[in-house]
Image (cartoon, rainbow, N blue to C red; front, side, top):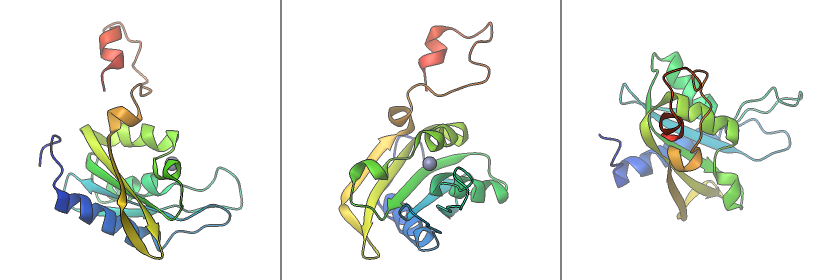
Length: 157
Ligand SMILES: [Zn+2]
């Protein structure tokens, strides 16, 4: 699979695995989120949000899924699926921290597909598909200001 395409079947599979991950979410005050990443080994790894009594100590579903892939030896991901049990479209898109994390592990300008979940099933009509470069046009890079970096390099995904 190239980064240019993401088959409809793969999009559906990513959302299905994300939904499965969502069922394990540990939620104290927020809402349940599931994520799935297609990793370099061609396997899909799921994640879920895990909230903590201590603010800031929990983890989002997207980062949980990426860590799951990393634990299995992957350092690159090819696509991301996100499912949220929340009726707002804004709640579907990854938070800023996750956009940065996705970008750091992305194999190119990968797709992030999102959908709402309701009563345990994916609401296909709510599906959104965005490139990581659309979600995070200016990622943070520790070497962004090295002598070889030009403004052109800085703004390219
Ligand atoms: Zn997040």
